[in-house]
Length: 170
Length: 170
DNA sequence: CAAGAAACATTAGCCGCCTTATAATGAGGT
DNA sequence: ACCTCATTATAAGGCGGCTAATGTTTCTTG
Image (cartoon, rainbow over all chains, first blue to last red; front, side):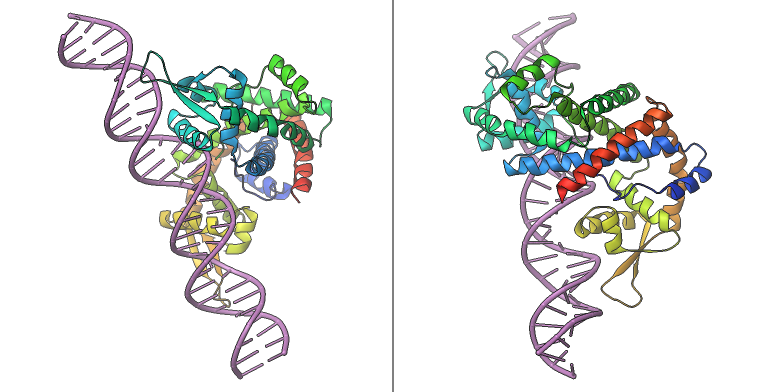
């Protein structure tokens, strides 16, 4: 799901050199950005191998969770792609896979024949109920480097960054 | 480079429900993990579009930066793949592309004919010197949601998580 | 010193997700 | 009613990860 790069963050000395060469280099910002990408990469690799154990991917898991939230209701294809923040083309591929695995069902829309609805199957539900307990347990383990108040602090800082990034994107 | 999912983090109510259903769910840990992945995804998307402007990718940029650190020295292929945290097979592909673009040069090792060395070309150096000023400027902009001390705090929290994740991985 | 083991980069083939292009269906204005 | 245009899902092709297998080259060791 994620590939970062750089085994080690740049050393203080290197950074110092670059800061002289490039006037606008903000050392704290650069280090924080790299640390953010690196740690997220670490975390996503752990999730990837966890999900691989159940023969799914992060992308498929997101789809399953979004359908789980609605279960037993079905969810509109276009709405699902929006919530998952992927294009409809990408969603087609994910659903193809999940459909083949028997975890998801395509239902044609009752009135608009262009549309389709998606719903978790009994197997899909069973898969989630089998994996979620250990998923939440391992998640807590992955984050065990920080105590509760540090986790809250981290979340706040990240969300502040998120807001700015959303603004920039628009 | 990165694909996250979930347009919105789960609402407090949903989380509360799941916490009842799954005993080991640690709400702070789950929210922090999702926030981490989401914000890293935001950031990497910004970098991706920045790099696309210069017709390279994040992966290629990492290779260029690692060679830039050594410039004008050449760097061993195997060592480069290790530093970039990618397999040699993947590196072959990246170097193929960068070679075709003329930013990198393959040099056969003077004594061991199995090995090869890699070096930035003049064009590669020129590319970096053209893009790095705005790269560092935009990086500072992306991170402008936090002030300097918050950035340092964020980095510390992330690195603490990183250490635990590295331990888990081994 | 010869033969087998190890190390090296590449190739081939798979996968997930992307973007762009395409075909089918529906909605709206005249 | 019809033509246009928008919307929907899919198809096609690319990129960059991965593993496993390949052909060289070098090292080891009997």
